[in-house]
Amino acid sequence: VQLQASGGGLVQAGGSLKLSCAASARSFSMYNMGWFRQAPGKEREFVAAITWGGASIYYTDSVKGRFTISRDNAKNTVYLQMNSLKPEDTAVYYCAADLKVTPERPSYRKFANHATYDYWGQGTLVTVSS
Image 1 (cartoon, helix red, strand yellow):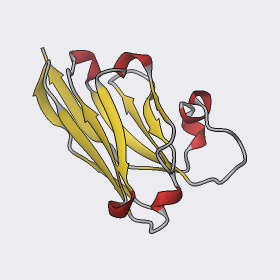
Image 2 (tube, rainbow, N blue to C red):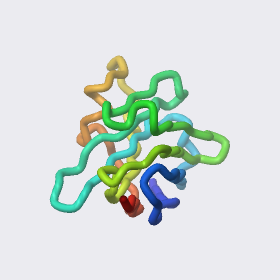
Image 3 (cartoon, helix red, strand yellow):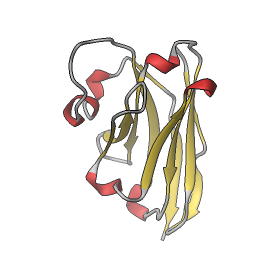
């Protein structure tokens, strides 16, 4: 599975960007998908996740109300719409895919854990200027 993230760039505080992550696999509709970010000198952190059918969505508290994760299974793509961007949102953003089919109930704890994911994209840089 190859994941190609795009859409990053330089934006002023208060602005918007929409990230895309295109997957190469035809079974994309069965994958749970997540977005993570890593700021300079910091650990990678969870941003948002969406389950394979879109029934469950999770966000870290700092982006709730500003970011929206969505997916288009017909296009094998997951999106992250980012509004009201802040300088602290500056980071490299990574998409990730969880291919495992398990009886485990979806949960924030599961999808916020980077170890849940099997494949990662290359990252796209988002820079928010003040």
